[in-house]
Amino acid sequence: MKSNSIAFVLCLIFGYLGAHKFYQGKAGMGFLYFFTFGLLGIGWIVDTIVLLVKVIKEPENTRRPLISFKIVSRDQHLENLERWQAENARPQWQGATYTSKPLYEYSWATNSTSASLRPEPDNPHDNKAIAVYLGDYHIGYVPQRISSRYYDVLIENPLVTVQIHGGNSRYLDDDGQLVLVKGEPVAEIYPGGLA
Image (cartoon, rainbow, N blue to C red; front, top):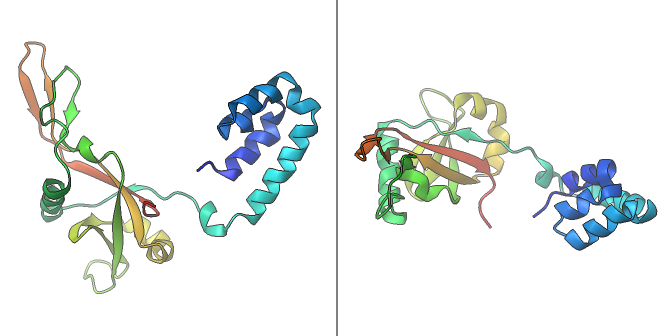
């Protein structure tokens, strides 16, 4: 879904060129605006007002800023991530043809999946600790600097989207030998579960 806020800014600044129409996926109208200077300015003004009204009426929770961060994971969390991966996905490099560019083990989850945030008020290290779960697997924690600042926002919205990537990589070296490079997977989470 395209953001009304972005469309409004594009319309306000470049509306006479149809930039907001291209952004909204209406290429035909975009070209019409481009060649007629926003329908002689009238379409530009009308669209600016219409988009401003949409932005004002937009629910507050759809305008909240995106909070993204890397999950803090330890060895046991990485094991849980591997278990989840074994049950729900396959390594990207299974049956792959290698090149000189690295192919990461955990590219399998660059497509997002839903996860959940669970508060841990009894955590001995931080009473505002927030655990991140993929299904029943605890895969890590929200970093303390994020959980202390956005605790209430994250707890109000316990469903999140997680993107997992990285991990071990393989590539062909200059001699054509397959090289394995050890690395830990990175999980990044964003507010809002998948629809």
